[in-house]
Image (cartoon, rainbow, N blue to C red; front, top):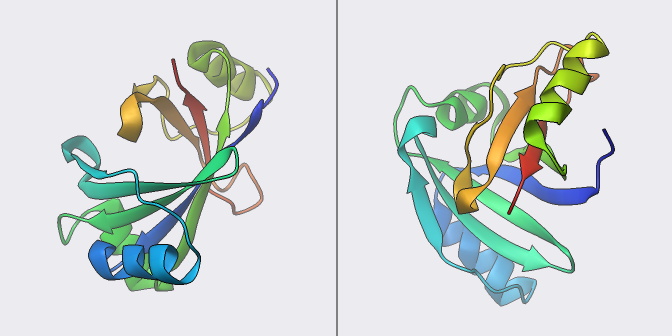
Length: 134
């Protein structure tokens, strides 16, 4: 397995609309729309910058992973996602290297991606997402 590029950087935010204004009005990025991913209890907006994206994440539930992250750490970078060619092969490879996986099987991610997370205990306290996009 080889990471092809940084796919996106996930940033946990309390208010998606307010945060989008900063990225658009101050940094000059353009929001490509938003979507709700019910399975992950999150509303997501992508803002392309170069050949990667900033992914803003707002929790849709008090018990969602983003809400818990913000409660513990405050707003900020929540994960970094790497693009892979084949998500199933990437998961198998990570497991063969002794990495603990949060996701043993791919799941749906925003923007139609197939994703899987590596547990931060295996990746030097960084939540790493593997992302395959068709």
